Image (tube, rainbow, N blue to C red; front, side, top):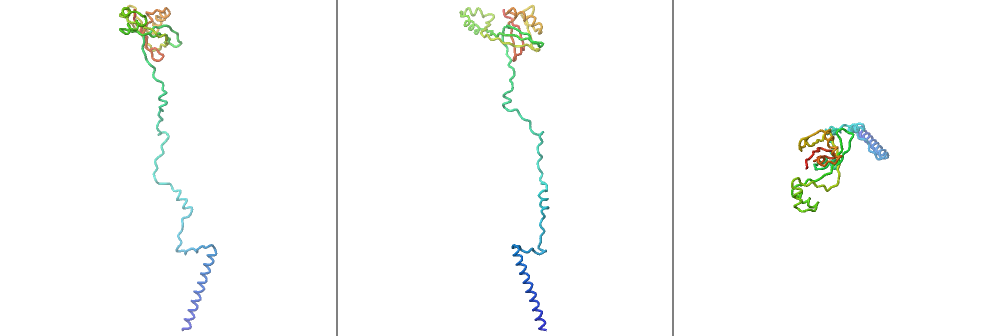
Length: 225
């Protein structure tokens, strides 16, 4: 009985020694292959995500809401720059002056005739007396006598200004039976004024003219004895 147990112990020891030698051999082979360790047992293996799975995950769309991009039509309208505003043409200046009509010229367009005006100053009171004495070198008494009733029409600027009538120009000429200015049409004004201009009739060609830019707004005959 004891011999049988001793024999089994020897066999078990031999198997253990052989297994140990085999394990050492395996380790030596692994070290010789580059220092790689043996893979763990099947129970310890954890499957890694495949490259395809990683790429798919990176390509998943972002679920975070994004604000919509503004459309071109929603862009605000461009405003005029200060330079553009500064270069805009100013409105025509409107002015009224006393003048003698000294010339005229035909225009091809209907209702248009060019007239030449010699602007003058119609002075009254002390200003008329002072300027009359200055221009004529006379005494104050003489200046008063000359300007007291009708003032002094003073013309010291030789500049001649040309303006043109339009379809909207308003005309006034003396009434046939008085010295009152009455409204007339374009044709009547030309028929009476052009002969007076050509004959240098200072009585009929003395007017008050209103202009805007180069256009005549109104020509009004003014009585002056």
